[in-house]
Image (tube, rainbow, N blue to C red; front, top):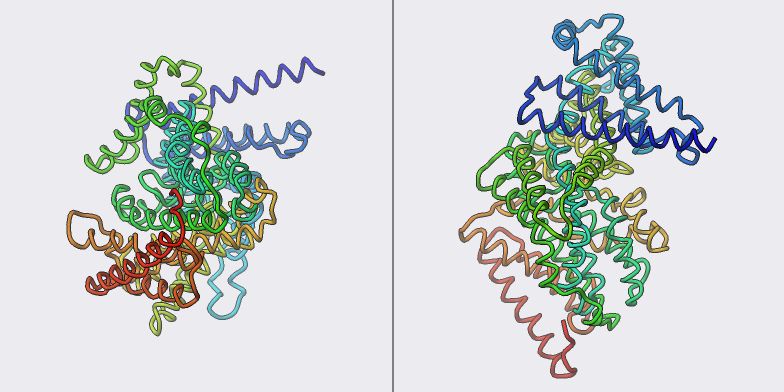
Length: 627
């Protein structure tokens, strides 16, 4: 029995290695030496992604070998269907244009639907597959419903044509996953095998560790750095939180606060340029703008998100009279930066190619991976060996299942929304509400995004939210980019919004605290993130970046607003402040965030006077605390 188990594990290891190398070959090849039609490429992507799901996520997680045959049946079926579509691509396209499936395509379409639903269930849980099943049932039986919810009714054949086409599992969500997301996952994987997570952590510790409340500031900075590459709130919590949460607790922060800080900081990685999360690439595709435009627009709101969190952490450390980490326990910053120099070159290449050269994200990421490999070859301590290269490919494949499962299942939902017109009906309802009040339409959109995002990754949450809400917000007069960024923000923030806050759950587990308490505290700490979408919808100048007066005013105002909001949350400056003073700081935040330059300047002056008076008073009464 032992020999057969060892033999299977060896086979599984070789299979994963071959699958990983093939996946990298196809995806890199598409944009270099192996051009192919888009739908054919999506078929490759979905096939390889589903195979990765079933090899990495067994049917029975507690006893992986119990239903091993079922797992391999799913792998083989994924391969057969994918290869059939790829080999017979021309005839597949012609048949799909007739809206009538051949018997073999009908069977393959049904099997693909089941495989996608099962893959989504294994990786993401029951929420998204349940939504997909409900939309399919609505397409089949919604014709019997009365009133606005009713439609003309569709056969299973018609529903299957939509699902097994470029309107469904080979549609935009899987397309973005194939064209952009995987390449950046691969870039992140090669950074990881090059030691980026440890280097980013060391840089964060060296920069902030000795400051008051250093451990929490380390959590904010390291989670921001790592999260902007990983793009997954839960993955970020688990990776950086395993180090930062115990460190925060050891220094004196409560379990609840430590978990909340990590959850909020990790969630923000999805909105922090230059890389952001997978959903940002979907957003760029839907809006029809270069990814660099999205990254530039998202920069100031993301900085405000982290700046307010950083200041809250600082003020909490004053409350608890916490000191920093002793100097002798901190890594040397110069040595760490020297060690991490090889990682900054590919990141710089990525930024230059994306923003300055305006290169497509896929080509920019491929060049950045090449730069990472080349710099790794000259690194004596952590040279990029063949094993590390293969490990990077395998790590990229390992990160693929969640994205493919989310995008493919979202494709089913989007396809059914399009077929039945359900998305349009909901959009019309939002528009009719917005005719009397744009604000109420935005609030309703926020609530819908948050509910849709419960238990879902941001990518799936954003895709569904954009399908339903984006057309309505645009009809109400909002430009496409702010409207979609509004939806994108709440899709990301749903990870910390109770009752189903997946990032808060992960942080609560590491902190040993009740998940609801961590979630509620996280919402309080991330209040700037919840308010910012309303701000940049009403004042799109916050999405502007340039060498001009507008940018200067907005950035100064951003610092004032973030500090004021943090003070309102904590009720401290250098010592406790009164209720009246908290109200004054809130008024300052409201005044400063306005579009009017005069109001902003008035806010700056009020803040300087009030904040400065508290600092001066504290220094007269006490010795200054190192910060």
